[in-house]
Length: 90
Image 1 (cartoon, one colour):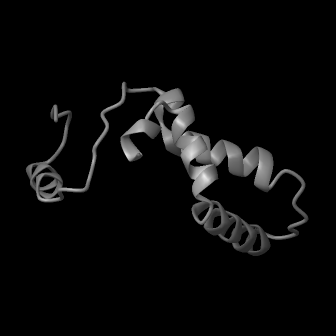
Image 2: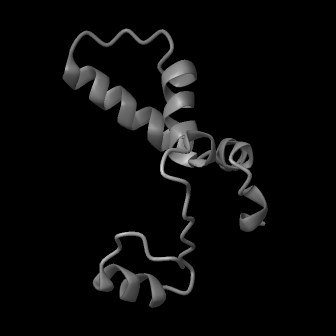
């Protein structure tokens, strides 16, 4: 793993986790970042026509939708596939 401003403590922790895979992306690379795909799907699909009337309602709805997404392996695999890393999880 190339070190790019990563503390020794972080490097040691990562090395101690056999199931942890770290991907080093270019500095600005939203197309390669699965988080960007998750937020994009949440915004444009799950919350597309929400009826939340307050921040609290929006937060509760967002948490519920994110939990639903997390429990949908087909959706999660699709989001990772779009980032070209799905084959690492087979």
